[in-house]
Amino acid sequence: MTRDHFFQLIQTSLGVEPEYLWAANPNYAVLRHPGSKKWFAAILDLSPAKLGLPGEGLVDVLNLRCGPALAGSLLSQDGFYPAYHMNKTNWVSTLLSGPLSDGELMDLLVLCYDAVAPKRKPRR
Image 1 (tube, rainbow, N blue to C red):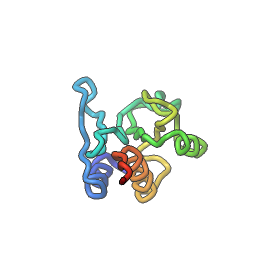
Image 2: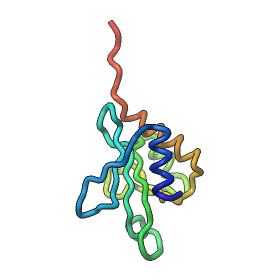
Image 3: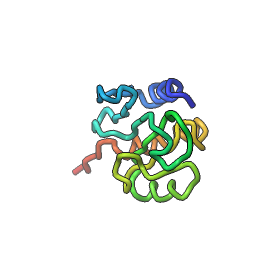
């Protein structure tokens, strides 16, 4: 999957636009829940070596905020890695061109999005 296609899916499905926060890393983007303002994903272009992978050049890496239970489950699958430059308890990394189909990736992103949504207050 390309970045453009990924961002188009996110915009269409969740209404979220990427934010580019760092002048020193203009290709690094974060995706933030509009209600809570918390990040649920980030895309970085990195050397594969940063994830312990072979290869030259840069690859698009998707960091996903998924919580400890889901992170542990994902890390047991091929194509998922301890999060690059994030809390490794709550985040995982995968290649944007990695093991997931578009539908599987969107299902996972919806879980990450929902996990950072504002919490509802109980009714009295």
